[in-house]
Image (cartoon, rainbow, N blue to C red; front, top):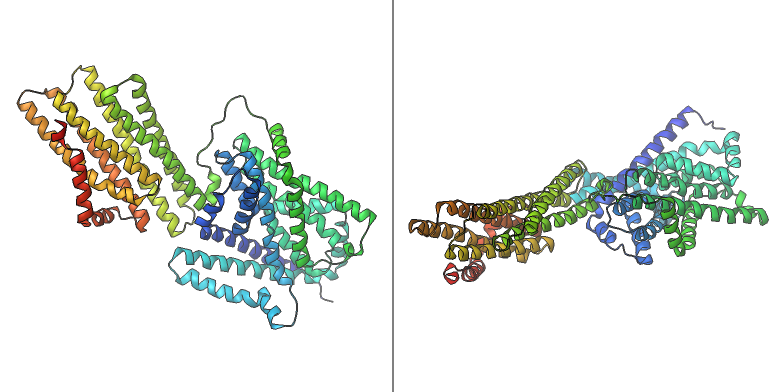
Length: 587
């Protein structure tokens, strides 16, 4: 009889390490490869129970980890993007979605002599997937193909690790101590505890189910022992979410609490049903061996039953969470960019863009309010300009720091391009807000010195400020709506504003020579038209970024040159704006 020795132990440890590494590698590559599809799924999070449930199932099926999904949900709640009620439905869906991993791993237990059955066994097709994966990873420059290669390599590694573990533990079935160990696990409470502890240590219910499936090849794992262990695994997987909620808002803590209570209540109820059934019926199959395929069935049935039981009780779970995690007397400040999203770059970038839109609104509002101060100055309006400029600075620091942290992650080519686009955009919006304060200070200088422009000068400045208002609206709308069509209208208007600046400068010098304006007003006049012209330059940069994003390149000057080369359309727009902002008509 073959003995289970130290070499078997080392092989088991090696197989376990490969299995966990492969699962982690495949999950990370799947997240990156999913990209926009993952964002699409996350965008369907609504108060509708079915939508939330299927969103949780879909996201977890894609990234192969209910823990990762739940951590993301905690992050969404912490950022105020999702209500607690929405989070509950998504968490329930995640518990069902995670069962797909056990079904994939159960393929290793397929037996049969037919060619079709043999082809279904991982040992038959995994080497082919590994070969394709290494070719994609080493020889393809495209980021998506690179990630596809990592997915295949990760899957091959975890299946190889699974096969190695199964081979290493096969001899355990003949050892009496191991047989007695699983006799102990017939005690449901002990089985639940073992399942919870093992899963808490490796922080993955999918991985712990895989380990159980590997042990099933010994023939010593019975239905009666496996069912409580599987139930306990659902409780153990809550550890990741509980750790991630440290330092978050109360609602985020409530989401993690709901995840824990969902699994505890489901386990207690169905364990009680299982124990009572075992006590009164005591079916013989409870003492029979369980295989990989049957473990996958039990895992799925249990998670589906928990969801069916608790889906109608989401309101009760929400009230329990609110009662257990009470609000502080002081209101909480929510983090707009949660670091939990960094593990899922497409989600992190989508959130960055949302915050960049808020920043853009602050910057544009600041400049438009500063322009309004030219004719309708009030202390409140002036303070609002300064407040929005300060907010814009804070937004730039927040987004910039977050993107620097994100850059340390492995990003796809698409995500790298989006990150660079956002960095460029926030710099331009921040400069626009700075110029808004410059405009405001020029207005306040006029008021403090009790000087003003001539009647003609006031009308000419109104023409320029109206053009700046329009270019602000166009560039902002093109960014928010990702509308390259609107972005293409910005450049001819920017050229008009450049021309207006030179015309206003020349006209002011002529008035100065005639004694119609003072030198003092001339300094303020020069500062104002310079601030407006530089604002239009930044609007042009913003429009260039939007066009770049559409064309799939980040060479802004190339995009602007290409836009100007379309002479007919450019000239038509230029002439339209020239007529609209005519200084002759103003006078």
